Amino acid sequence: MKNDKMKSQYRINDQIRVREVRIVGDNGSSVVPTRDALNMAREQGVDLVEISPNANPPVCRLIDYSKFLYQQKKRQKEMKAKQVKVEVKEIRFGPQTDEHDYQFKLKHAKEFLEEGNKVRAYVFFRGRSILFKEQGEVLLLRFANDLEEVGKVESMPSLEGKKMFLYLAPKKAGAAKKSQQARDREAAEAEAKEAKKAQQEKAPEVEAEMPANGGLFANAKISADALKKLTEEK
Image (cartoon, rainbow, N blue to C red; front, side, top):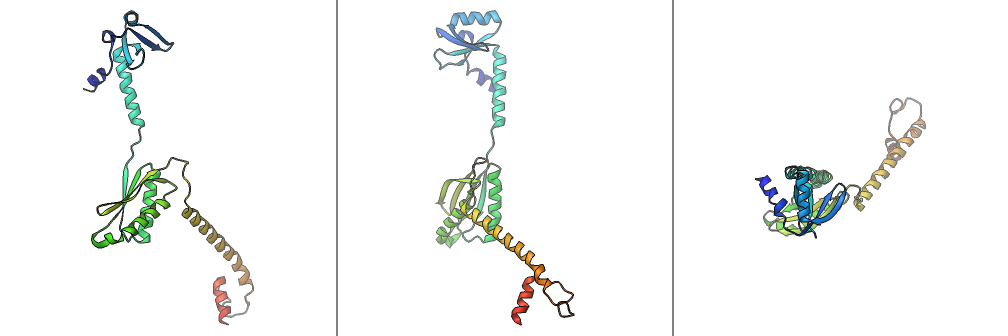
């Protein structure tokens, strides 16, 4: 059935009824009368196949028709195999989703986008919770902002019945930019790391100043914070 459909797409030999055609091949192209092109095909033991009927003049090839159909079928399979199948993944929220659940779903959405899939996030309003639709919109806008590095907004939050939808598509590799919130989070993490490092470096100095007698802390290693607290109490 598929071969019959493909055959009907091309005219060959005597089905080509124009005055002249352009013959293309490995050695270039040339415009010749259709009668001469048919004679050339017979001499070579091949077919005259019209591959571009809308050109002026129509473009043809001198090739065995069965071989031509095989090449076309093979090319279509290769193109189909190269096509990336994009799936749409759903992320569902409630109008009052807690932070832990939000971060969990944010992580999965990021993975979906990085894999090349689209994301459809929505807030489901049950019963009187529709009164919190503004809260749901804020949540979806935050969601889009947190995913700015890997996804772009295809459709802003819109209410459809009891659901408010947000559509995100993956960004191309290398084109992602960090959101302001992500930059602020990274800066805060770096600052906390430096503070912890400074605290660890200061602790041995404090311990060295402790009395060496058999007092309460003689044989115990305590942190700088505990020692500071003890000093304040005195």
